[in-house]
Image (cartoon, rainbow, N blue to C red; front, side, top):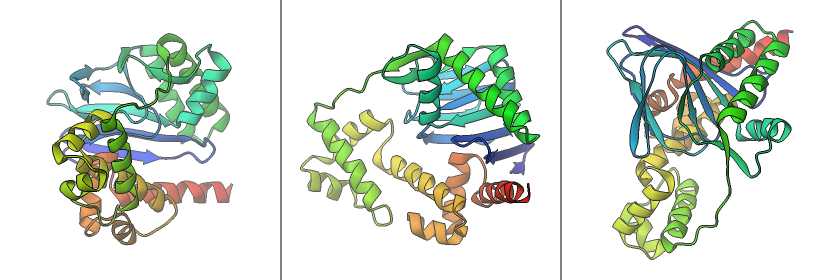
Amino acid sequence: MAGQGEWARHWQYERLPGLDLLRARYVRHTFPRHSHDGFVFGAVTHGVEAVGIPGDTLHAGPGSVVMINPEVAHTAKAGGPDGWAYFTLYPSAELVAEVAAETTTVRGSAAFAEPIVTDPYAARLIREVHRAAEQGNALAADSLLRVVLARMLRDHGTAIEARPRRSAGAAAAARARELLEDRMTDPPSLDALAAELGASPFALLRAFRDAYGMPPHAWLTDARVRRARGLLEAGTPPADVAATVGFTDQPHLNRHFTRIVGVPPGAYQKERTRERKNVQDR
């Protein structure tokens, strides 16, 4: 990805399962509200990143680490005219749970209470994970990854116990999410969705936003992009991916995918194809 001084590489190191990596510099790029099924650890190296979380916008500069828990809706954009550069790790929830179980006394689901911390040493470790992976040094990359995850869990980790959803609104929101996942290529209108669930449109809209941090239409776009990522990783051509997940055409996929993931779908797929080839050639 290039333009206006921007560049990005979003990739996987095949010898580190359960981890995605992003190294980028953004100036004009804006990430819309979205969430991840795993964790986010972003080490800012230059400039300022403005991170929008529920109820606030925080700013991360060099030496900061941005930590986003799974399924927490957030935005990101430049916090100044020069944009920002960062190294980001996207470990799966399973990997973080594994490290937490081995190195901490956290019980329940591991999470982080602070979305941004100043920790230059941890930020350096995140950069070193990237460099080791880029050099094909699996032993160093895996070791450094586990060291930085253990450090963040030790210093900033907490436990979020699963709580049953009691309200009718929360139950309707969960059911709405299931229906949207099932009907991704032909979703109902808000009015039709609410009628099917026996709720009013505004009540469902409010309950869904409370539960998932974004309205149903934004959540659906995010879900389509997540499904698109899996299809691209499996080698499905982008044009076929667009139709499969419910986008009207490939440019529609390109636009939303690039905004949410940070790189175009073609570049995303190319990196994964290249890494698989590297593994086969070893």
